[in-house]
Image (cartoon, rainbow, N blue to C red; front, side):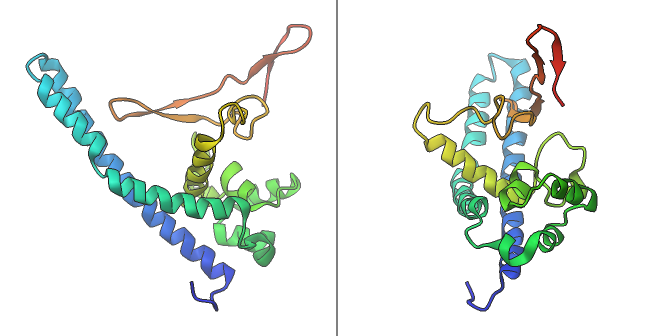
Length: 209
């Protein structure tokens, strides 16, 4: 909020704030998963443990609810600004300066440069290149700036009129081909991978890459 703060400083501060927010949210999720695991352990003693299971599941749902909503608002606020680059980070820092600040690996940097990517949202949300060397090969996207954009995009999709938006994970969508994290009732997380096969006009099976 200091008028003399440069955009570079503002983005550094944003990353630190969002990293703390994400760590706080993850701690809440960890506690919820622990409560759900306890509930699952009691299922082998049903029906005598029915009430205890219900109590633990309710505790898991309620734990940190207010804090989660507060952090969601913070993430959405930052995410909306980042998706539209309202502050003008890219123009002020330049492509390489922005990649340096985001710790984009040189290999990925040159790849997206050749592809003509020159947009903040593309770097941190679509391609998820923030700290790219640390999560290379992972099946899911992560990072404080990505999580902020994800929250903002999720809110936009949630509040859009029914039928107004195409499926972002469908063919032609911006997230087509991206693995999706699915939270299970027991607190575990599984990865749902899309079917990237299609058929050409002759009926032959084609694998998209």
